[in-house]
Length: 287
Ligand SMILES: [Zn+2]
Image (cartoon, helix red, strand yellow):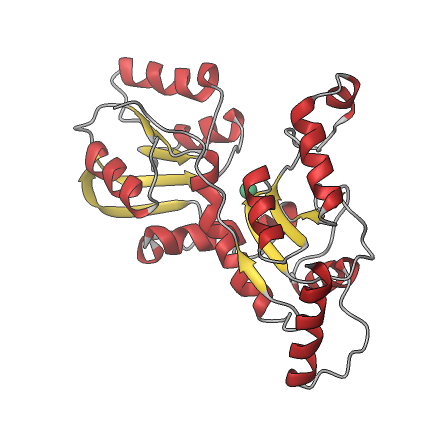
């Protein structure tokens, strides 16, 4: 299977007239991204290889929000062995597997075995995609929400939307991003225009700072511990403050930003196929 994919790639090279004899390696793809990202490459960073060998010839690039087992299986099935993921592969921010390995964790072992058997290389692209101007994740998400016209020129996280209620705003976000399990804290009838958006898990400190602003009524986030930002907004509501929180889930809150990344990669990588593979929203709700 893999030999076939390599053959197909070399055929497309000759069709495209590429002089390059050696196939592109994962290391070369990363170097090209570093050259094109438009911001200095700073360390320490989580934007490193999490599994596989940097010198692996790349048969195709799968771009995703989260390198779940499901995403890896779809990448391998489509003949793409280089996975670019925004979020961790191994269940914590630094992809530290030491504890799980000590416990001989069966889920971790199955994933590592799959990665090895399919010759996958997994590289995280998080810090520098966010560091871009504009932030690559926010750019894709603003487009997916169709909020470009509402975005502040001074702060890309702030939006002034047409007057609506918290309930209608939450419904429209749920629909636009096709979310199953969106949750809201606040008065459904609250009339508002001022919205802030912090995708992913920005942390309760940044989330609460946003909510402290006089020009923010509703804050849209990926996720937060419920005993931090959620409790803060619950208290604000009890104190009759005009504040609300919309929790859209980590994956839906950044997914379109990685679709944006896949299109961006195509602007300077043409030797191998590049595909955006969406990660599935993990939650469902009982009827
Ligand atoms: Zn992110």
